[in-house]
Length: 374
Image 1 (cartoon, helix red, strand yellow):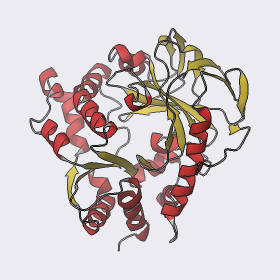
Image 2 (cartoon, rainbow, N blue to C red; image 1 turned 90 degrees about the vertical axis):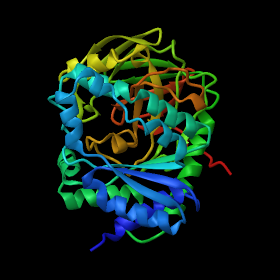
Image 3 (cartoon, helix red, strand yellow; image 1 turned 180 degrees about the vertical axis):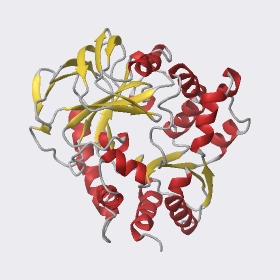
Image 4 (tube, rainbow, N blue to C red; image 1 turned 60 degrees about the horizontal axis):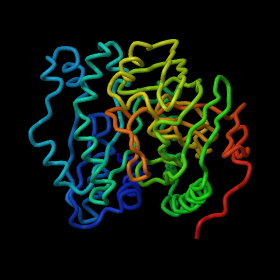
């Protein structure tokens, strides 16, 4: 029997996140565990008059490639991949894994090469998105592996996911996200004239320059669920230290207890309790991997716990996150990298943020509520 929550989520992504129009070509990327949602997305895209097709990625194939492939094989891209990115109008990425730690035992330098190999395609996709030529949305299909990471039963985790997307019950999820969009855009507008943020918390005293950069409201059009405001900092001006109480995950690997020290925008010292070799491999990926491509406020207070999934964790209400690596060109960012790795800093119990010397955030909340943009 079809889960009506999956059907409602698919309709929300197709109708609101993508605003998919008739005649558009949409690729639905999924693993085998995400196929229940892929099927509903396919049906919703058909109803919208689009031309959908499903691309299924086998997790075991990636494990084999990293474990057994030569350098040339790891770096190989299918000859049609570039042309496909140029031809399609939209992509939906379903994050759903049978094993969220599948690549944990792989050699960091080999995993690094695989990540670098996709850089050209990733950059090409984001260039088209930034130019308004392509739309993209990422969404999670609940699976037992994700529930285990979150310390929940599958039933509990499904309810958590669907509540965060506002499709747990029949109602008006589009209306909810439209209201959240107005609120988040008001925060983004307030931050538009800030020149420098100072983030203070346990093991953290970081100055991030944002003068002249545009702030964006993440309101459900790229991710579902959503709930943050973000920008790309000035590349050469980040100074100080930042520590992350939450583990950081990237491509099926976990690094715990990360602390970073920045000078003139660049990571000059990095520590981790667990996974330091992988941390160093990512920092060495390219010249831009040691600089920040993003700084953001997590503002979804319905997401109130760490679940070891970045889609949710970076939006936990009361946190901030920074991303090492590639910046958002449309926001004024100039840092280029094959890496974009979100690291979440928990400021809910003991944290402050200053904007140009003025305290604007304490213990996970802005001191003033925004006036919604009309």
